[in-house]
Length: 231
Image (cartoon, rainbow, N blue to C red):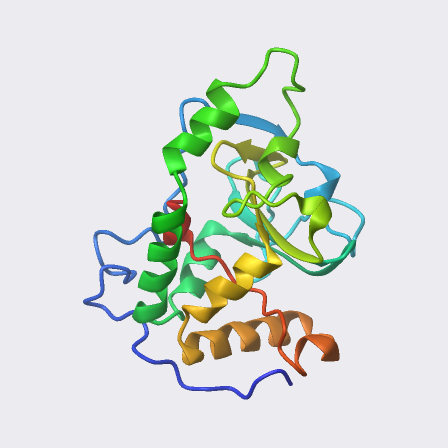
């Protein structure tokens, strides 16, 4: 095991602004894309390596993800050219899962994104300023460089990609995103030990972890909280 199971510190409670009972909660709420958003067919990069086909079921509830009205998140973690973790979860299950993150960590992750990412600027640059000759179905510009550092994906040993999808299509506006392994390490450093323990347990329970990821824990994949990315 990568990390023993632990008790969470200050998980989201009913009086927390991130609580499912709060009017500010996004639990189960559909993502509202930018007016500039475009839907494109899910590319091979975001297909399941295990199945050699698109993801079809939510990891948690088993819902059919290919229903046209189903919004869901795909996350894949790469070491070199190998996808060592891949998951697809409907937004409802993704939100419920994020409730296991401590309030401290949720705020730290949101601040990490807010301090370093120009959300509207990214959408404008990628969508409003696209050259007429660019492939209108490509996501390369979205995932070829780290969202935070701008480092090219071709130079990375580890990286993580995230896409928001609806049915058989990727919703292309702020997402998809790619985050370098170095930035993922920085992001993990702002999380509480309890939250990192929960994430390790989630990954171990659902996927298992290769021994090299646990001793020593050089690179810990991080489950991206929906609120942090304004998803």
